Image 1 (cartoon, rainbow, N blue to C red):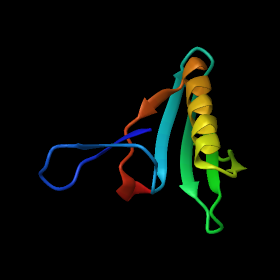
Image 2 (image 1 turned 90 degrees about the vertical axis):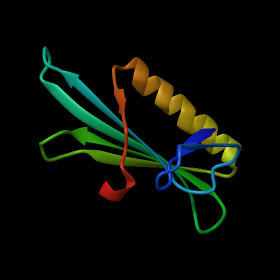
Image 3 (image 1 turned 30 degrees about the vertical axis):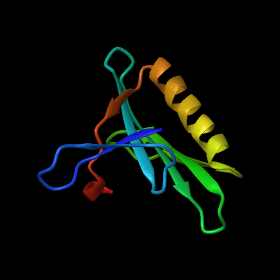
Image 4 (image 1 turned 60 degrees about the vertical axis):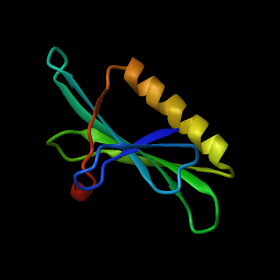
Length: 105
């Protein structure tokens, strides 16, 4: 998994290999024809017991509702495969990745 991290005034640093911290991806979908304005946040994080958790939170933008789905995986490889397959499936459904600022979470 490739992760880019910018610190201070330096250029982004590319980390390849294993995720050692929580990874967030935010997606949004705007369909004016159908009146759909939805968000989706995918996160990949280690648990306290050494497992990995892929969290998918989604719902309408600007309205009440939504849900959260948690999938626990025994290994990082399994969690990354689930994370990437979910990401690809949501992009095929019309969701667009949005840059996430960690200070907002």
